[in-house]
Length: 147
Image 1: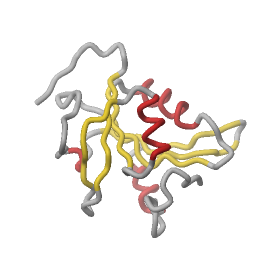
Image 2 (image 1 turned 60 degrees about the horizontal axis):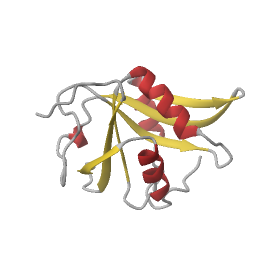
Image 3 (image 1 turned 120 degrees about the vertical axis):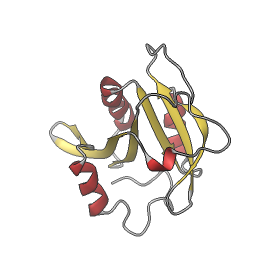
């Protein structure tokens, strides 16, 4: 799978088989296919996401309604349009999506912003690592609320 966005972000076997299996057990592990061949993987998981409970340097666009989180996007190097395909699927399922990425993953940051996500602040993983956090509400979503 592709790791060109930030070669230091996924180390020591991450994502592990256990992480992928946990995604699948929550009905949140998905593959991306092209002409019958698997070309990518991502997790699409319902809220709450424990690491999103605290956000520094900003706030979520909507902190009142349930949301889905996109994690672990990976693809083969010769696969193109994977992020767009993933977003099309995700927004067909939910209008409130959150995503995060490493500060050095410039490719992912570019894709996230290009697809209309708004930077909301910094969240922290369980191990203390920082991640840039984003949220997007589908354009037809008229409800914005904060806690």
